[in-house]
Each structure stands twice: as C-alpha cells, then as structure tokens.
Length: 251
Image (tube, rainbow, N blue to C red):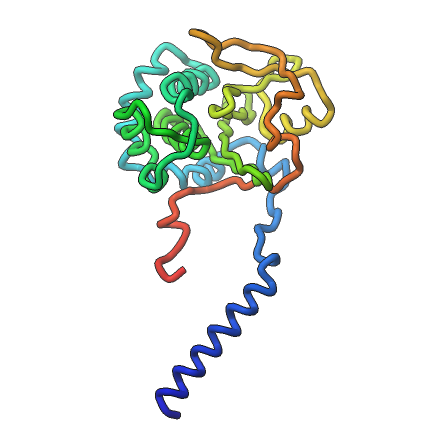
C-alpha cells in the first residue's frame, strides 16, 4: 500500500471516529454511581484516603496554607467552628470581588490563587476559586473536605462539604453565596442533599451567614435560595480537580 493511501485511510478512520462521537455524544455523560448512604456514611480511613486525593495533588502547598490557618483556628477545638472560621476568613477577604476570573488565575494551584488574590485589590474570582482555596485550607487542618459541582443548565455552581467527626455527619459550605452552614430545626448541620430536600419540602431551616463583623444564624428565606439548589440537575463530587492529573497530553 502506498504512503498516500495509508494517509487517506488514517484520515477516513479519524473522520468516521469523530462522526461517531458526534452522533453518540449524549451517551458520554457521567452516570450516577453513588447512593446517598455511600456519600454520607461515616468517613473511615478509606473514605479519608479517597477524598484526600485533592489535597495530595497540592501537598507542597499544605504547609504554607497551614501557617495561615493555624492563626485562624487556634482558639477552636470543634471541627465545625474551625470550618466556619476558615470560611469567614476567605469570605471577608474576597466576597466583594466576585466576578469573572482571569485565565491565569483559573490555571493556578489553590494556594497560588490565594496569593495572587491577596496581592491584588481588583482581581475577580468566582465560586470555583472559593471552593478550591477553602478545600486546601481545610485539608491543611486535617478536615476532610470535598469539592462539589451543581450542573445547572444556565449556571454551574461549585461548593464544598466537610466531614464533622464529632457528629459523624457532613456539613454543606457555600462561601460564594454567604452560606457558611445550614442547620435543621434541631440545630444540626446538614449536607447538600438534605438541604435540597428541605427546600423541596419548604422546611424551616437556618443558615449561617456573615453579617457586618459577625457570623449570624438566620432563618432561610426559601424564595432567595440560589436557583442551582432548587433544580434537579446532575451533581458531581470530585476526587481531584487538577486537570493535569485528570487528562493526559494525548486526551
């Protein structure tokens, strides 16, 4: 077979492959593979190892982050109090600059994002930046934290959940929307799916939010809840967010 025919064959093969991918593109979505009980069971050693893949990708930054978070959480012994203190720190520093981040910021590691934002008074950030920085800061204190994406059709949104060993439960965290925690009528912190279900039932629930110089607990006004929480869109729980690890050069 001549070289010209070989090139033609390769070209046709790639063309057919791309046509096939286009035709069946809707079949390449993520499939639901986690149950409520598997997501919200007690976080044992295996669970910690699974979610810590995120922190392991940025292990060199954990020490620097810990130097900052030590000064934030030193007065607290309860995990939930440490979580709220870290949230409060990040929200206070950056909430006034929510907007469109630069490509350079988006491609930076979590702690580099923090340093760049800390050195600028105008650089903007969005939910993904808050989620990544918060995860790194929380992991620097040994708090099991995961990044979650709500795939709303008009506007995806990223937030976090943290494991509280004292109550054997997961706590929802959404710094971007000033939701530093959600509690049920008994005052217990609840997770993301419980929050979504509470919105559907219109349960009486409270949120922790930063107001002036303090964090206050206030009743949730259901009509003001972000639209992403009301929709039944797919939810992604990420083991890691480093694209250089998730994708090969070939891909």
